[in-house]
Length: 368
Image (cartoon, rainbow, N blue to C red):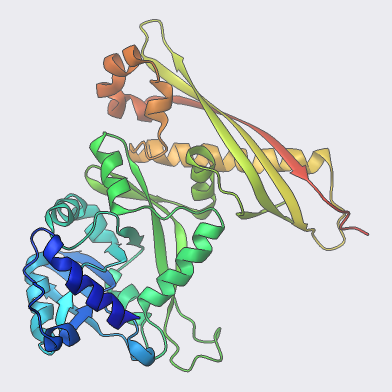
């Protein structure tokens, strides 16, 4: 499969601007192409560190995993090529771009500009922020039988099926260019030793860890998993996510949010009211506890309401409107023209009210 992809890329390269390959490439050149599928970037005081993985090869050949310090991204690419002279490293197939915490904090604008100028890397590459070092995620989760790309692909499918959003670099760049904040799925590495007994390689796992909050200056903080779920309730519809309320396991079936601005005598925004509706179903009840009716509805409303309020408060603390409140509050063109430019200063001071209508539906009686 990977060989077919390589041949396809070689055939298409003459049609892509900025590429130096041609159809004259012989079979030896094709054989030497190695597709880099995951790239990680960390930032240090004196430069960066780039870590890459090619993904598993034909017949489950181990991935080529490399890491190097460098003065910049182009220097890192040149160094990695020197470390693997038998291969021509090819970056047009990068699926995941991992930014370590410091790289996300310091280098985000540079990374966006570099990828945007790159003739091979794509702005629609999925981006994730690693709590810690990207190098640890790329290197420590790769072994003989698996690698970071395979682990991320598995996590990607699971996260999307449960309602989490994995944002691309393009989506983050667009939000930041418009003056808003952006959300980015955060991940962390966790040891599997003592948990996975059939995998002798004992490589670490990579798991979702809430959302990272990004503004035009870079990473400004994280939302914890509950606050991240609340963020999804505001900006999306996290169908399939599981939550625990009063000891019961519930599945989110549907969610909607209406954002209403409140304005002072001079027309300036002074507050925001979030009205949310959350519908859930019971998957499992607490031992010895029969599912409650209105009491469980109220518990769902109170629990999710606290999460939503916490997510907004954390975004305000960071001064990062990653929840898209600006457009909802300043929906009128006149409001946007008058107060859009001052929103960055107004946002942290807004009074926030959250109202949640919670409803738990049941298709059968789990107590029977």
